[in-house]
Amino acid sequence: MTAADPLVAAPADGGAPPMLRVAGLRKVYGGREVVRDLHFSVRRGECFGILGPNGAGKTTTLRCCLGLTHADGGTVELGGLPVPQAAREARYRVGVVPQFDNLDPDFTVTENLVMFARYFDIPKRVARERVPRLLEFAGLADRAAARIDQLSGGMKRRLTLARALINDPDILFLDEPTTGLDPQARHLIWDGLKRLVAGGKTLILTTHFMDEAERLCNRLCVMDEGSIIAHDTPRGLIETLIEPVVVEVYGEGVAEWAADRARAAVERIEVTGETAFCYMHDPAPLLALTRAEPGLKVLRRAANLEDVFIKLTGRDIRD
Image (cartoon, rainbow, N blue to C red; front, side, top):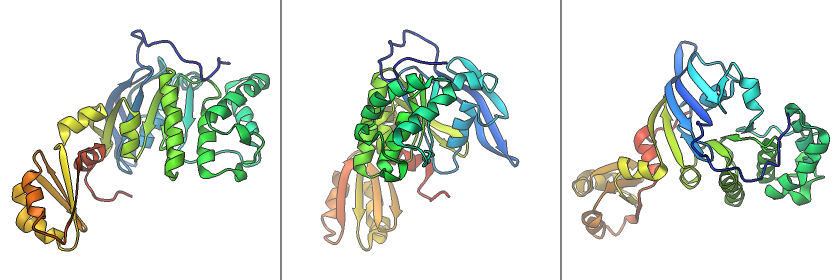
């Protein structure tokens, strides 16, 4: 099975069925339900985010959607095909960027792409024709003959993304694609993903970077303990689930200051270490209080998706 050029824009959706439909999905490990009755769908040409702390069930959900893990209940349709019944056929239309790079260190950059194309029965000649444009897309055109150990971490991630496009997938699954990268590398990958969505590709993204989700996702859901606890556009979640203004107050003695003086001036307050996160609609009363405390520092900002995430899932570290 072969496909056309992976970077050519796709036609508009035109009322087509969802590219991914999940209904009642369940998965149990060792008597523990790690995915609980999930329902969501992803339209053609959108980036859909799945957010959640460690252990929330994100990766298990992706594996069930790809047919790599058999669910214990519910249904999955991937590209209109039932999974796991037709998982192999469905995966011909899918690209995957795993959480950790699994490039072959014995091959060059070009060879990694050409060899991977064999999994999709793409002739070597066709694969080699696609390589230059994929490497240009990934910003690796001058690295075609390089070996994997000669690439930086950001280059490896971009090559993994290019490899996921070798079969011209309709749907791209990305499991924390920018973890461990510096800001420059993250922005390069973001630019590439935006181009893919603009070209009609469908993206399913897991990430721990809330700014990444806010920039890239058309819609997203937040998972915790195997369940979806919120589902909307990034802006919709911010506008409906969190106070609009955040004032971060930090410095020595902030916990005592927050407990004794600040609570009456805010709608909600959380103290973590030496920082008090104050949430409200009108910051004026709190800012007046802080002016009388020269030892404290103040940062006023608009609420963002990270604030929503913390409110829904808590500040405790998950391992």
